[in-house]
Structures are given as structure tokens and as C-alpha cells.
Amino acid sequence: MKTLKRWCAVVLLLVSWGIIAAAQPPQPKGEYVPVDQLPPTESMPAAPLLITAYAFVMIVLFVYVLSVARRLSTVQQELNRLDASIKQGGRT
Amino acid sequence: MPKWFFPAAIVCGVLFAASPFVVANAPFEADLGLVQKIFYYHMPSAWMFLIASIVCGVASVRFLATGDYRHDRTALAAGELIVLFGLLTLVTGPLWARRSWGTFWIWDARTTASLVSWMIACAYLILRRYGGPGSEKLAAGLALFGMANVPFIYISVNYWRTIHPPTTVVPTLPFSLGFPLWFCVISFLLLFVVLLKLRIRVEEQQARVDALYLALDERS
Image 1 (tube, one colour):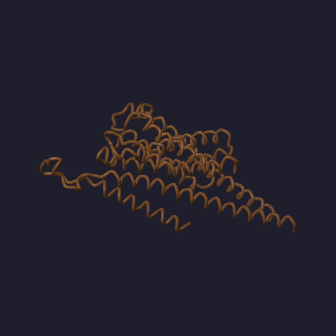
Image 2 (cartoon, helix red, strand yellow):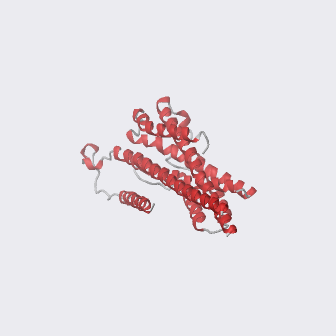
Image 3 (cartoon, one colour):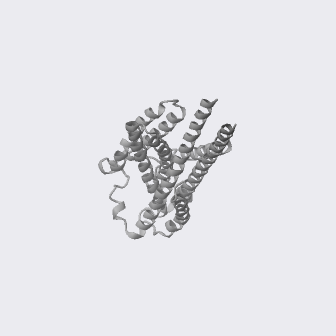
């Protein structure tokens, strides 16, 4: 569970860092540039944003389902253990 | 678990596995192009975020009115889902906005209210986790504020100046764009129901564990 939490923290930190880094305002331009003369770095491809969005949703949902399943499994084990110890106490 | 749970979970898994293919086959929107396809996960996440807020608020009201801890467990489960689906909404939205609006974030009424609502849900969970005995009633009051924010988030785009599309966009979508959207909405809705039931189950079992510890204490 600790490892899972550490991984979640690392993923959240990376995502936050990426958003903060990308949210920096662009440098003001000294002149207007015609659209056909823009360098390739100026045009923003949509695919990385789309893939990031879908991957983020899938990973977060997967981690959450895993987390709930582990919590349910832990509490179920504890319940079984307590049930057994109460039954054992009842017999003695 | 109820009989419907496992078939629902399997159907949900199949729908989620199929959803990227359905979205990939959807046509490109004329103005936004490829990035508009984020919409098919962003909007269902946002709807589940709002539905979870309503479920949490209604369950909290019922808990405050009746004192029945079943409603409290439902509210707690829904509170966690508000944070989950809110996180998905607040991350996928800016990724879409960066390409279509030219910026990750604008402080318009909807985005600001959504962020506030998400933070209220985080506060609710922190209060439940660290508030100590009796904090459940205080947290239930907090959940009411979260629920009160929902209609404001929904209609804000119709009344305040914003570049968010108005609520009239979805009902007027053509079939080719509407089908993948409703497919994803059904997938997310089923996922919401399955996760809510699973999370309530954790709380129910935890309540049984607590009751057994009390029984053991009384015996010894």
C-alpha cells in the first residue's frame, strides 16, 4: 500500500510539474510572423494532449479500482479473523 | 455483493475497453480537430463529478435527518468519487483548453466553481479522515455546500461571459458525434455505480469490524 501511495505521489508530482512548466507565459514577440514562416516548434500537435488525457484517465481509474479492491480485501481478512476469534471464544 | 454487481462490473470493463475504439472512429470536429476527442472523456467525467456531489449531498441530508449510518457510508463513498471524477475533469479540461483556447486555465465561472467544489470534497475527506469522533455530522454539513454548488456549475456557462460552450451544445449534436459521447456517458455512469457500491461495501465491512471489536471488548 505504501508503494502504491508513493507511486501515486510521484505521478501527481510529475503531472503538476508538467502543467506548471507548460503554463509559463510565452515570451513577447518583437515582430509579427506570417503563419507560413512559423518554425515547426510553434505549431502545437493535438495528439500528445489527447494521448495524455486518455492515459491519465485510464491510469487514475485503474489505480483507484486497485486501491478500493485492496482496501476491501484487507477489511474482509480482518473480519474473517475476528469472526474466527469470536467463534473460538464462544466455544471455550 | 448484490447479484447485479459482477455482471455490471464485467459490462463496465467491456464498455471501457471498447470506448477508445468508438472515439477513434468518431469524425473530427470541424473547428477543433483531433483535440476535440478529449470531450468524450472530459464531459462524462464532469457529469459523474456533479452526480457524485448530488449523491453525497442527498445522503448527508438524510444522515443528518435520520442519524442512520447507512446514509453516512453512502455519503463518504460518494465523497471519494467526487474527488476522483473531479480530478479527471480538472486535468482533461485544461489539456483540451491548451489547444482550443490557447491556455490551460481561465478563471471563468464554471472552471472556478468546479475547482471550489473539488476542494470542498477534498476538505470533506480530510475532515472524515482526521476530524475524530463526531466529525461525520460536521462533514455532512460541508457536503451540503458542495451539492449547492452543482446547479451553479451547470448553468453558469449560460449566464456569465465565458468561452466554455453553453449547455445547448450536447442536445444538438449530430448522431456521428453524439453516439460516442453517449457511449462514454453510459460507460462512466456504470463505472460510477460499480465504484460507489464497491466503496460502500468497504465501509459496511469496516462497520462490521468495528462492531466486532466492541463485542470483543465487552466480552473481555
